[in-house]
Length: 122
Image 1 (cartoon, rainbow, N blue to C red):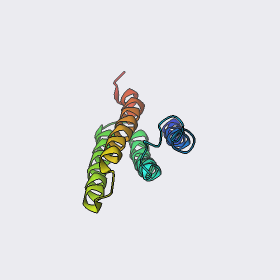
Image 2 (image 1 turned 30 degrees about the vertical axis):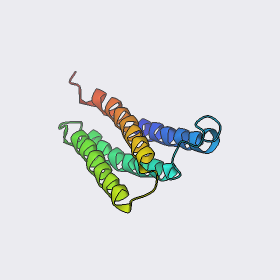
Image 3 (image 1 turned 60 degrees about the vertical axis):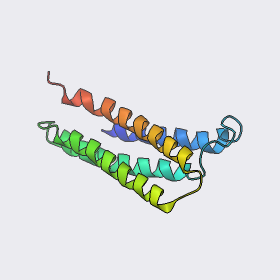
Image 4 (image 1 turned 90 degrees about the vertical axis):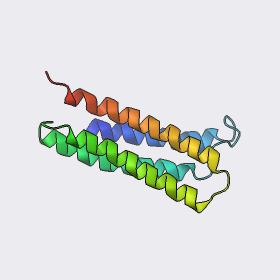
């Protein structure tokens, strides 16, 4: 599970580097000014999911409840975060929502690829 944490940190740093170095030149400032906050949110989510997956690893993956709990946690906190953004009525909310969904899918796909091999029976 150390690998999960390292790759999650790498994904977050990659997105931060893209934001700070390529946003003006490549994306023509399309990325929202709150994009780093989104990355921080997903990284903190990844830490919580890593903890859940570590608990599953300690129990020898006897139950998929830890993986399902991590996915459910990511989904529910994501919905809660989107609701907060929607209630705050920020300007240019549509690009921020699209960027949120893209980041959500990237982290979710990574999480599934990290957890699924551990759930397969030999």
